[in-house]
Amino acid sequence: MAAALAGALALAGCGGGGGGGGEQGWRPDGDVTMVVPFSAGGGSDRAGRALAAAIEAADPEISVSVENREGGSGAVGYSYFLGREGDAETLLATETALLALPAGGQVEFTYEDFTPIMKIAEDYTLLVVPAAAPYQTCTDVVDAARGQRVVAGISGQAGLDNIVLSLTENETGVQFDRVAFESGGELIAALLGDQIDIASLNPGEVIGQLDSGDLRAVCAFSEKRYDYGALQEIPTAGEQGIPVSFAQFRGVLAPGGIDEEQQKFWIDTMQRALETDEYRRYVEESYLQPVTAAGPEFVEYLGRNRTLLEEALKP
Image (cartoon, rainbow, N blue to C red; front, side, top):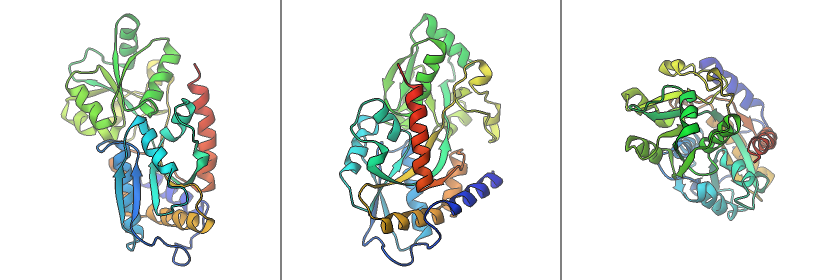
């Protein structure tokens, strides 16, 4: 983990923007707002709060408040952010919904309407069931869906969990009945209350319930097994004959219409934020892969990932 973090910091250090640190030129005049386009308690909310803390640690003169604007599987928050064009004192904690919402035809905007600042990490999900569920593997879940109704909870139509379930359906020919919630926290409550049969959740969202034994992970939608503790025992979907893996990115956007000096300030600030203890703790406690990309590199990543996503979710 230490080696991976060191590599991520080295990559971020050479990504666009340079090392001026924003000591000269444009600076925020007042408090900065970090918009989270999902409700409190889920992975996106934790990402937004961790990013706010890391920015404050990197530049103690900046105060960042977190504002949740949930609804529409992220569309409400992103649409609000679209209206902040030119406002360099407002940021957004972004993730895969930035690409999935336009790919699903649910919104008019694309990532090109915003200013990508930094990809800070990559995240995968686990397929999770209640402890008493009869399913022991992802294959068991798929086999059950061939002959009966299996209810899958998702945190919005554009979330990573819906994407991996769609990819699983494409690979296996089964269909899950979906129930949409606004956050990972709501999904966990629904699993514990036996309102749904399965859910795809990030490890950082559900590790407490896995450790307590209230919930159980039957596979990971990742390319390889996790290196973290007991998560190492969870087989990948690929090991079980279901070749599905897809990474959710975590990152920071600024609105469209900001100038180059403002963009450079935020890239430089985020590069320093990646060196803070706040960032390191967030990555380790959320079981993330610290794969980063700054400025233009983030833009290139989004372009490649959009193409992959559109191909994967073709009807």
